[in-house]
Image (cartoon, rainbow, N blue to C red; front, side, top):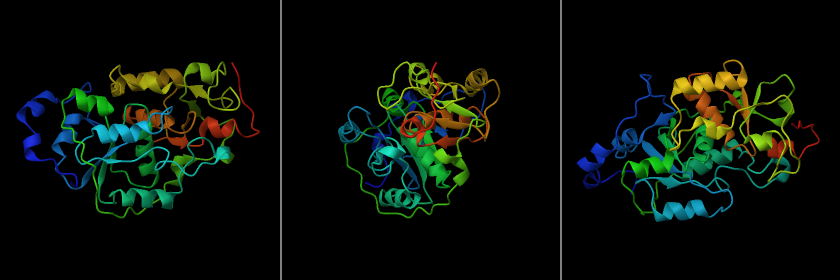
Length: 300
């Protein structure tokens, strides 16, 4: 199967169940797609769904979930194997993959420069990471399924256990170096936003990295605060108000997002774009890299 959804799967019952989501009269941002919109594109050979489900404490869970059931035509990309570089502790827990290697990985999965990619997960960050990585490669035809896999299931979208195999494609990278920040570029004047939970931001606990704390002068907006209870992103107007309150101003292209290992920072970056602000930058090494360096940290 190469991405098409048999017509008998698309029943009138499914079409009636999946409804468009109103966003307060605002147009749907191209970085998001609803289950209804994805359903209409399942038979489009130029639309590829990518299952990014992953569990931090159980690295094999994502592949098992994909095998147990996924969106028809979706291929699976693993956070560690496909969306991160080789293990290198000094570079953090999910180091950035080299652009040429990532482009080859995506191409082998059947993703080419002509494709529109729809990424989904369990609303925990890897889909936003793929969204950011593709845009970093210069491939802007990428959306995140709003509400992720749970929203697809809740909408009674079709599910298959077929293991998808696509013909290899070619993704030609056009690197957007301005979207990425590396550790050597960070200074005290940079508008940083920490996406981790407040206790880690304040340095009260640190379950994963060597030193508790945060990058000095970083503001805080917990990535989950962008989401509704069902995992969908908040209305853009609500997101905008929340971001202004957290930063004391509008975020813009100079804003730099980080988290523990460069995954949920991408959720904050996605939320900033959906809220209608400028496309931000991401420090992908994040606190897991920073805390392993000799650079100062702030507590409290």
